[in-house]
Image (cartoon, rainbow, N blue to C red; front, side):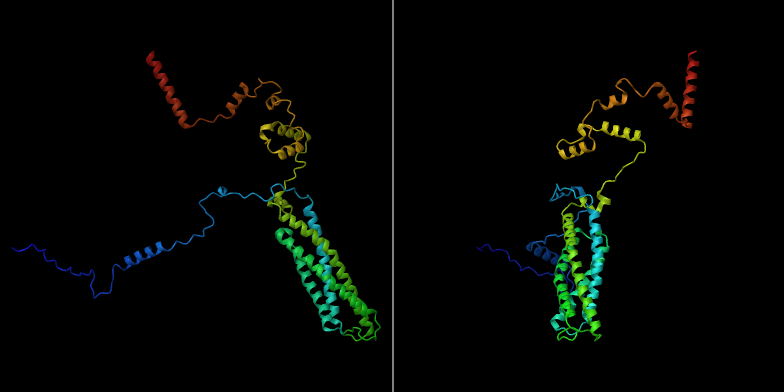
Length: 360
């Protein structure tokens, strides 16, 4: 008896889906996309950095960060005038300092007979002073609103340190030129000039002494103005933008004095304003507003009668709209009938006549 044997299974035939003699692979893109998806899932997706502005969101929905100084006292009303006055005084001083620096530089260039160290000390500070004063004239000539308050404060601090740093150099120039000026013309070590003349050498040394003294005094006078401008601009930079005294065209209220020539008209307007104000329109939780209201309108708290009684002369039955006024308004605002309205009225009239005839 023959045993049961499994059927013979042929090995699968390897059938390729493409011609081996042709290099085109139609599934290459699919395999590449699968490979990119697998690699992207293994590596984390980079965090999106932008856009920082969402145009599909209302601007009022963002959180408004409160100011660091919510209750700051207002600055003096003459702050802008004081700043402009100080800047113009500083402009005049810088102009004189520029002339003194150039004059001192010319004098020390003409002088001969000095050693190298003294020559550098005599010539470098006036040149630096001339450059600094030229920029100061450019800066002070512009409006203070052209630069931020922080930048103006930084510049005035820089100007203060420059004035303090130049003072000892001008003292050195004035001291040594005065010493050589008082010396005898033929003394050893006395400075000379290009002119090789004792009289002209004395005049040059005298001019250098006077110019150095004046330049040092001008820089000394500029230091308190630098301190004032620095402190003022520093204080302005710490205020909110709506309290900037330099932007009075944007932050100040219009002065409406003498709006009405007639005193009767102004009195009637003030009465209407007082009558329209009520206690419910003011916030009792804000004592600052109530105090301001009391200062501006001292009699607003006193209400002897209501607004309606004040207008009707204590007569509640009074009505400004009468039958005569209603008749007059009807005639004034009556519009001419259109063609459609006239045809409709004519049709209705003919129908009413036919009904009367049928009844009769």
